[in-house]
Length: 132
Image (cartoon, rainbow, N blue to C red; front, side):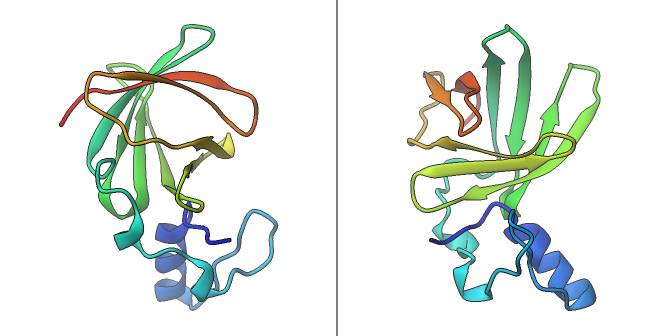
C-alpha cells in the first residue's frame, strides 16, 4: 500500500535533519512507499472546499499544492494548518493537530456539487468544492 498524507512533512524532515518519514504506526516508511506529488489528483491542488459536519459546523479547507492545507475555522480565523494526501487512488487523508489523521473515500469533485462522505472514524461530512 502506498501512502502520501504526510509526504510534505517527510520531505521537509529528510531535507532538514535526514530523519526518515514515520507513518501513523510510528514505524519508518520506506521512501519507495510514498506516492509522488505528481500522482495526486490535480483537481484538489489549490482548491477550496466547504465542509459541513452532521452537527452543522462548517469550515473551509484549502488544499495547497505540495500537500499543505489550511482550515479556516471562521471568517476571521483562526487558521489551522495541516497536511493532505492520498492513500492509494481512492482515499483522501488529512492530518492536523489536535485531531490527527483521518481518511475519506475520494471521488473527483465538481465545483458547486455537494458530496456526502464518511471517514474511517465514522464522521459524515457534506463537502462542496467552491472554486475552480
